[in-house]
Length: 409
Image 1 (spheres, rainbow, N blue to C red):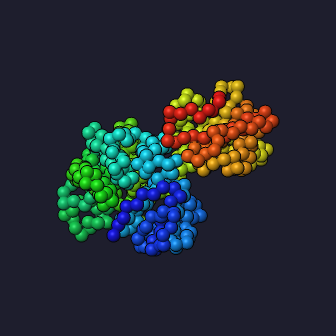
Image 2: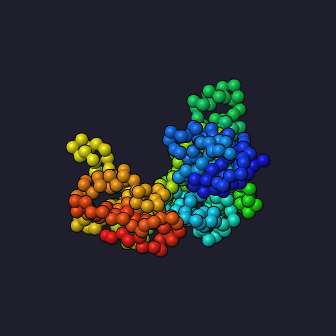
Image 3: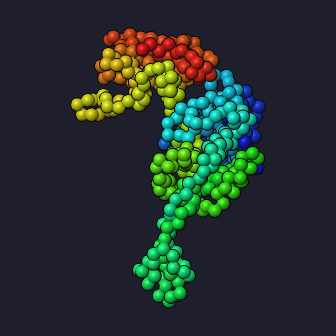
């Protein structure tokens, strides 16, 4: 029997009966647990989606790490993993995750209206499906596009242009047929086939009546359109013309669902579906948008500097560079780590920040920014070293864009 489980980072899943224990885990049926275990082992070298270990009283466990999103096993069991943000509820954490997703570049999430979704009552998968259906509803109101499609068929009548070579090849015996090439103005184009394929796929995934009903309605609109038998190849055939701009976000959603590993590549076929996001990347993206909204001139993932300039070796790529005209620059590096006190500040993070300061000659102010948690014992830390100001700041995700973290530019 399928389950729906919602946990947070660092919570864990188990499948064996356990003795009473102070730490709360989430029970998962054994079949789904073993599928997840195979998925984890197949991907442990590239990404630590879940960590396999054992725990006294629980046996084998899978502990959530810094990846959030959802995983669905083949029996329909869905595990959603939410950010662990202070002592916020699952509902509050889910809403913050959705706001963070809105800041991701080259993703479909930036346009959705969370107020319309009633997201506190919906599993993540149903939220993502609802987002797609809302975008598709807008597209259908504008009108789905048709185009002249080149076709080849072996007909009983002459239409378009006769293909002599194929006429000889296929109709040497059946001379009453005509192998023809012609153009047909039709809505059965690759973009619409990908959308219909997404609708069929999501109809099998959704458990929400409102989503299922909308999918049935939209499938009726796409009734005369075929399906895609090779989505990966068909996405390469999409026409990025001005006429097709209204399709852009719908197709981004379609790609997210059909060409799975869109945001965090994974291997194996042990799970039915996974849509996972690296919290390090989300936190960096969110901070970048926060600083832009504060009016700073921001460059993300800056390139061009090297630790060994003479050989162009060991590229430096600070998360955020803030321009102050030609006078100077401010560098901020974003680290999604749980910091409680000064001892938890990583030596490697400080060395990295110092390296940036020595190579970006116009830089005097350098910042490390960590997420803020409930048990944090300090507000900020500052050091002065060779005219470089090394600052450690903390960003409260529960307050969002309404706060001032004290970054001096």
